[in-house]
Length: 144
Image (cartoon, rainbow, N blue to C red):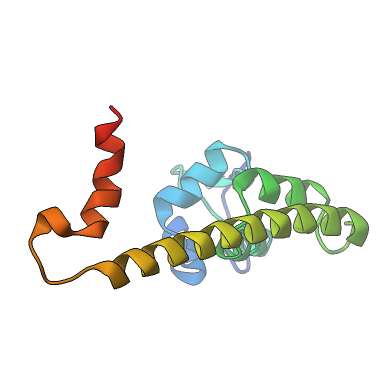
């Protein structure tokens, strides 16, 4: 981490980077702490100064998170070296594993939707002791 004394072209404060990326300041600091985003150089008074490379990396992380990739998966993708150096086969391996995870979660959600749909359909406007939704929710307590 260096100290800079003169202005850089396309330099951003952490607030500006946050505004441009849609990632809040604390999350940017967190990504730095866990070494997903390189620590930027600082001005003489200690303020972080980000450049285009950090902005691209943060945008990559943000898009990856939007697609549901875990931090470990994103770290693995970043370790491949970016679009200039990464092997498509290596990227495909990580993305395929993530896709399998998404499909598994989707299957679980479809099952959950079916159970809830059937249970809600059985609900009447009667008293709560006759409510199927409450019966399902209370079933865990009965086994305690």
